Length: 326
Image (cartoon, rainbow, N blue to C red; front, side):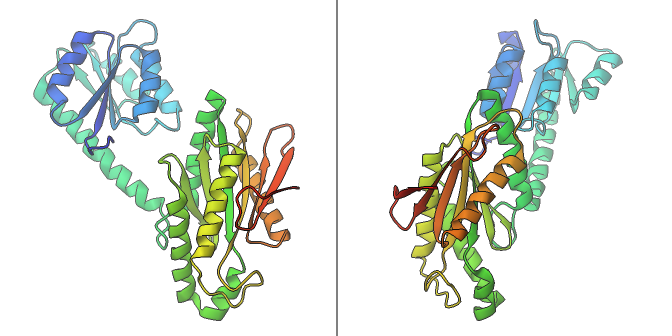
């Protein structure tokens, strides 16, 4: 979906004239992007995240069947509906397309009314599925992503970053002595506290690709694609300070007079061998370290497959940059 809320259609065809015909038919209702080859299409799809792909079957090099398999194997693209456009009119070609993941066929030469109807139907169905998925992946109390959504997004980001040799950072956060808060103030006040903390964490997230989730109970987690340890520590400290600044009274805390959080950070370069557990465990170890060091602080480590505890640092108190060796 693009910024003006029009659905995005990716048209893939090696003939520019065919792309022009499709664009003329659909451009009043949709944002159109295009690719002239299978290799180009993969990159365009990852950048534009279209709502629907209209894919030519017969192309030089990588044909439509091969390309559709690539789309369906990519966690970031697998749920995008694919319609094949082809001059092949036999049942075998249609069955082959459905077997590799296409949802529909249109034949060339393009009939405008038929194309509009099929594209509209499949875009509407995808929107309905997206809405249901969004509801299932949100925490009903805080409105943040839930654990299932975080783990799904982390898996997809690890796949993407490993392909490009990119960085990722994972944060685990915990409200200090929250059980004591509930015991002292009651669960309704505990829910109000969770909502306020969630809002403070969400406000610290600035980039659309970052994700903050309620991981369970009083525990939260964040994914920061393309972020090194210094950047992740800085954001984590912003979160820590933001929650403390809420000044929510907490008479049961052994840290101070207000609600605080402890944070663990794991950051590093992705490789094809790392999985969700590797990064979540690394961040959780640093969260445990923050708790052992007195809570209301941030601890972080650089992760690597060979030396997951190669480097560690702790950020203590309100001053960003007050780093102590681990």
